[in-house]
Length: 312
Image (cartoon, rainbow, N blue to C red):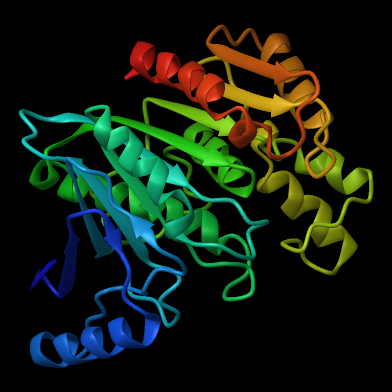
């Protein structure tokens, strides 16, 4: 493990097999290092659980924005060792109902893509208990712009970025992929870049929040006032932004998903068909629940790998 810093960011580089330090130990170490380097810089929140670092992969934790809670504002970058040239970037976005979780949940996925020759990225964003919607949307877009800013320094190609999200993360991936230059969720950081990506993978995605609201499904991210709720729900619902020229999207969903019901992919697919979208791809697991992707990992990963290979 080596630690260094520049540009008011501390870099934590982890190589080997497993990070096994206890929370208290890492917190003390980071506090000491931060005080020695920059008084207002944080190196990152310790992982909630062991982070297994795969052989042949370098894993780095960076801050793309300063945040009061270390759960937000960080991303993990997985790079293949002995990388040659500039390679595509796959950004993984965790789920958790917009209210829990962080980058560590998808660290394994980022490292898997590093093993396949990509730059794998996993990011944290502000949760709804820390900042209301649309903060998490803004964070994802800001993280993409930051990655474009540093892309060449990590040997990534800023013109070949894909998003991959699960559940709430799939909602954020869809919304971002469909509205790359929209100013509704704009922040000023790294404004010289946009949040455009080449393609997106959405696993168990809440794609139609309007229908979820109409069916009285509970959405904690929405305002209490009913009139504001309807308007805001439409604004943050991916299905609102389907358009003919959208980037390729691959949606995977379980037909038996109770948490994010089938109407999400059914309505999204119907909207794509009505608008003449030619590059939308849908895989339905007939008996799959909300966790189907992970229960059938090898088969599902193979499908996603083919999609990324064809579009990145």
